[in-house]
Length: 406
Ligand SMILES: [Zn+2]
Image 1 (tube, rainbow, N blue to C red):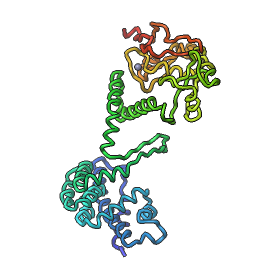
Image 2 (cartoon, rainbow, N blue to C red):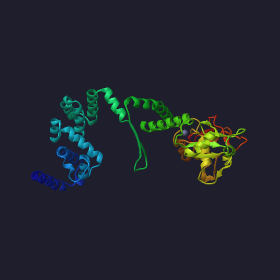
Image 3 (tube, rainbow, N blue to C red):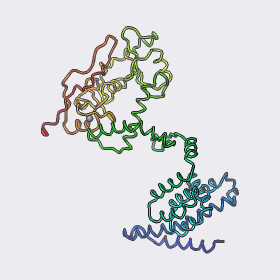
Image 4 (spheres, protein in one colour):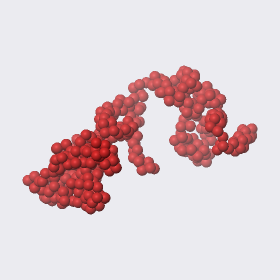
């Protein structure tokens, strides 16, 4: 069976092997893409129909596959999600002969067929109109129109309920080590999410623009989500136990005693005072950097080397919440700069370290810009160890351009 088809495939294979793509010019390459696409459509149309037939005849049971999709994945070397998509398409196409014809004759691509099929399944009368649209529009336009057709054809309340039932938030770590987050919810709930993110995103965007940074809106949206999480963590630490990094600053005496006395510190940095008992609770339950004020006097921590000890780094992060160039209000991607460069013997100390945004750090390191002290360091000297005052937010520095640029 299919001898003629098999011969055609061998012939096709033989002809393609004689084409040396590396030596053809651009115009011919474009022509080759068009021809290949034509061939692909014919074959994909046939393949999809055949997969549909394997489904209805239950031929997939031979060999012990669980279902059609698993069989397709196994026998065609495709990932399961792709196999599932083609099985769904094949099932829908059984009732859509016009779409099958358009696909087999190469008038539409598989991606277009997917859109027509999902809409025409919900609203059969739309099939012809969508097929016509497919000939003259992008897949994106077709997809939007298909979604509209489906929305109009299905009961709104039902659809809302179904989407809500399928709501989910998934996270995973990709092969590149990046954290991924994907959420599915009703548009109404999605709007709530975006309403919460938007003002923060705008703020971050404005701050970035002001300091000359240009990144994508998507990048700023991610920053906004982080800002939201920060704010949320700050406002709910009393009632929930978020699994986040918090800087808890507590005097050693207070933690040993179980409560604080005469001006001892027990607080979540940047949030406010907490009972010692709560601090102890968090110590067991959250991943945190513990800064025992009595244990390490951060003012005296000076390290001759590039390495910045963790308590010192924490102290600087607390002190310099924004880029310390007075005109700059960048809060993201701040880097720690040695005011007197490390190469010139500058120490890693509270006095000699400052946080700058990427751009200002680069200017200072490479373009001759300087930070000049114009008022005393924002430090007070409490009775119980080092404590950093953070209520004065004006940086104590002036930003000087290199002499040759004025
Ligand atoms: Zn800056």
